[in-house]
Amino acid sequence: MIKMEPLDDRSTLGVTEPHPAVHSARDYLVSIADKLFLYQESFASCAIEGNRLAEICSGTLRRLMNREPVSDRYLLGLAWTIRNMEEKR
Image (tube, helix red, strand yellow):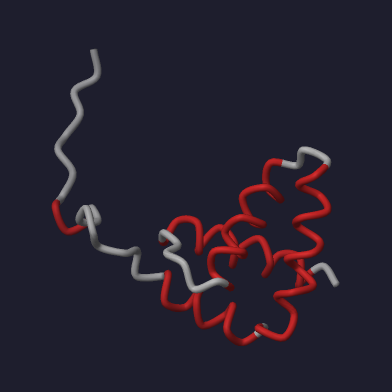
């Protein structure tokens, strides 16, 4: 059996503590705000076909645009996905 050492408390997020990188993810999404409706349409179209990434990103983007709560991991995933798409353009 492998003995696991306890994690350093400073390396683990608190229950309600957002990931520090979420602020730059939010800033990135704000910087491309004029394109978010286009991405929402694209994600929704792919989600209809059962694309799991698109389903999650579509729901996250909808919540974000409606000013509903979005967790840090969903916001980070959305920003990373859109950033990758932007780089491939």
